Length: 181
Ligand SMILES: [Zn+2]
Image (tube, rainbow, N blue to C red; front, side, top):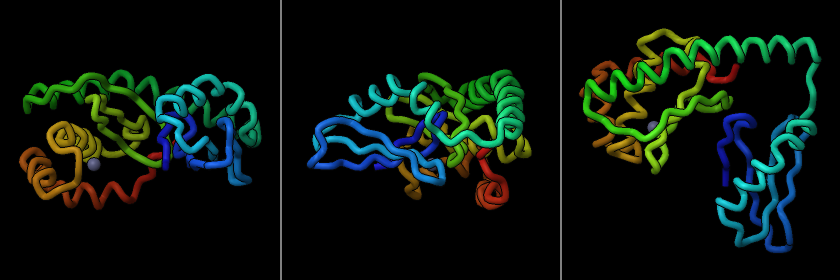
């Protein structure tokens, strides 16, 4: 199973019948993985992650401190920009097209632009501030449509198309950008 974390990105979770407790490891490339007992619930896994967040952060390979500082600064600027823009843009489209979501969360995972969870939380990547507005809007409309269709069925795409008739082009153009900061 892959767990999506706003700070650490994708975490590989392996269920291990022999393990008695949750353990985490970090690959040489810096990717985080967790080994958990066979019947661990998602709740338990996430709680473990929250409790050990600081520890994991410390163990992650530290890049060149200068690069790291530059990256931190970049994230901070982007986060501030995103905070003043994305939740309002989301709210604007939700009201315009009659969607109701519960919360808007900002992330900076490396792998996705946005997501919509079953508890109606919409997550948007702060990296969206680096892409043209029309592509940003496409991601927002895409996630809003997931409130009605939690899949990528033809009904889902038909709904995206009613709000963004050029979504195919936008989707393609978005591939030229990376969500990582
Ligand atoms: Zn989707």
